[in-house]
Length: 202
Figure 1: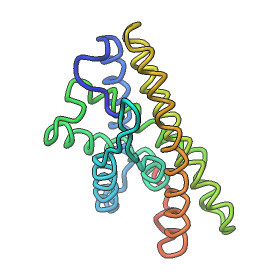
Figure 2 (figure 1 turned 45 degrees about the vertical axis):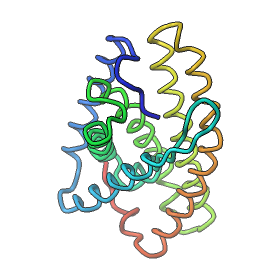
Figure 3 (figure 1 turned 90 degrees about the vertical axis):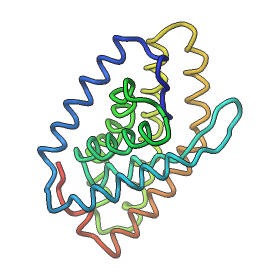
Figure 4 (figure 1 turned 120 degrees about the horizontal axis):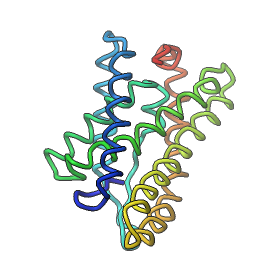
């Protein structure tokens, strides 16, 4: 769900850069530096997951794993996702450096909201609630990320409005898949490493 260089308008670029700068700064301030290995691993998970593109109609889609990143890292999702996207831009020319702020915000903000809204469910002892919380975190974070990306395109000009609509529709199946994957991952972590979900990263 990367936006390429030269697509979005200057005001959208500026807003994305400013919001991401705030998010990354807050995230770095709130990270427990003893958890840096966890941040690095989740940044790598995001990096790899979003490199695997599956053609769908005129576009391609991929897993994001931002719901899981958000549930574990909270505000730390901003620097983790920022690093993943920066490496993709530098190594594989996915997205770009000028649009890095917009792309980061469009993925990191939904990850943060997944934490704020659904970590209480995931921390419950009831396995069914953990699965529900994980599914909602995974699926709704993809939905919001696609809507924010579509909004970035929509605000950048009339020519991108049809592409913005197609982007959201293309990610409907990804929402379901990501919800299931995040639910299973959350339930697994709850069973074998509950401390990863019990820690308060915000």
